[in-house]
Amino acid sequence: MSDEVVVVTGVGGMGKVIARRQGIGKTLLIADYNEQALQAVVDELTADGHNVIGRRVDVSSRESVSGLAEAAAALGRVTQVAHTAGVSPAQSPTAAILAVDLVGVALVVEEFGKIVAPGGAGVVIASMAGHMPLELTAEQEQELGSVGAEDLLELPYVRSIEYPAAAYQFAKRANHIRVRFAARGWGARGARINSISPGVVSTKMGHQELASETGAITKAMIDGSASGRIGTSDDIAAATAFLLGSESTYVTGTDLLVDGGVIAAARSGQLFS
Image 1 (cartoon, rainbow, N blue to C red):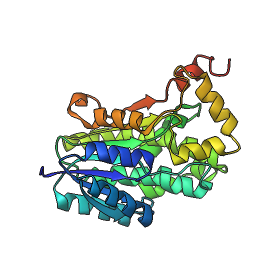
Image 2: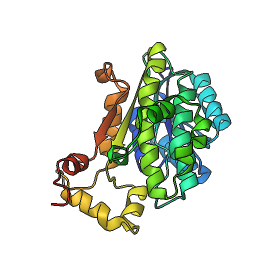
Image 3: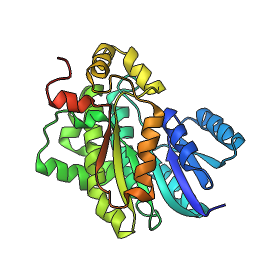
Image 4: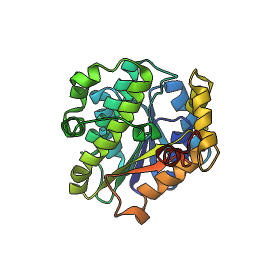
């Protein structure tokens, strides 16, 4: 058994598939807020032959995220970190989205940046929503990339966000910025960090969005994309494997858009044509 440790936060559709793919021959530490769902995935992966440990985490709490990072470091060399935990507008109110999708990402990037092993890599699952039009000043980007995680919620333009959909889009754009700003710090440890922006993916969260009041728009986005299909967790796991692996050692501080061509169609004026 290798002394390498793979950490995956969030055990939903993407998280479980990523954990299964990346954890082979390594110690696998998976974490989720929902203890029942977490234990079910621990049992499933253990039965499939993985060396897996489960730990409950609240990604909006620095103490909880720090504890997860410390637990991971105690298991061996943390060489891969995949942060998939998140909530969507169909699931959660504005405050929860900002706590999990904005602050949570910042906390994971900060705390795992302290313990990731040389040669290691991290991936944050963001969203194609972060590529949709949103005006930010250079000063705002600087703040979103550099202020302490907990201080993000005190920024006036964050406090003024009212609607869940706006909070989600803002948080995902901020994820891109946070990763970009973190790249040099991770690089000082000999590690890399990137984000992935999935499109509409066939997960529980994705289907909740399709069934929501904005579902018709989401379906139209799929139909108007170059691929014309919904994404799969395997699509995202493959992209994650690339960014965590040895073939992407010159890739860091950037976002990989894995959306079937939705944003390309939108930016070229073809999405709803």
